[in-house]
Image (cartoon, rainbow, N blue to C red; front, side):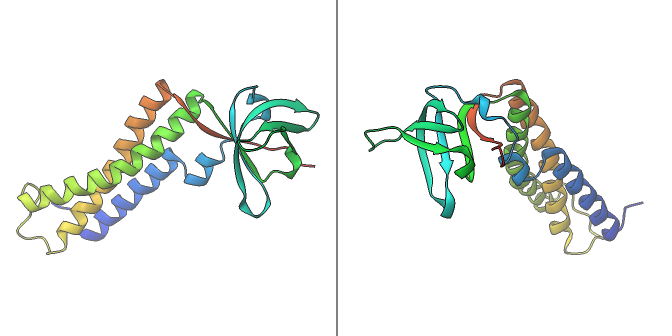
Length: 177
């Protein structure tokens, strides 16, 4: 006995919720909590100031609560307080956890499209076609493929990037006054 369309949609929704929970949402990934102590001399940093002005620079040294940065085009170091920054990112080695999150997000995005394409292709080729099913089955198969792709892609690439984290931009948590 085949499941009805509403039951299928509930299953797809459950898979999507599970996949989103495993992968984390985009704001969580981009705001991975870290410490400003991860910045060392010679690291490339991105500093976002008020009104969205973002500056890429090379970190030189700490001067109390301020960072001395080498900015292209300036002859003297640019000294900016961490309390005046809106955001601070550093390009450095990722931890295994950061690598997993990054990989899971990329894998889920790729899996969404690849899974949907496979689901639609299988339906169009007749591999999953049911002659008694309604005509909108192609949409259901596409959604099912997308949901499975999100979960499979997120887990597979997340595990791979967790084992091989690499380098990337890491958002650092700034102190508050």
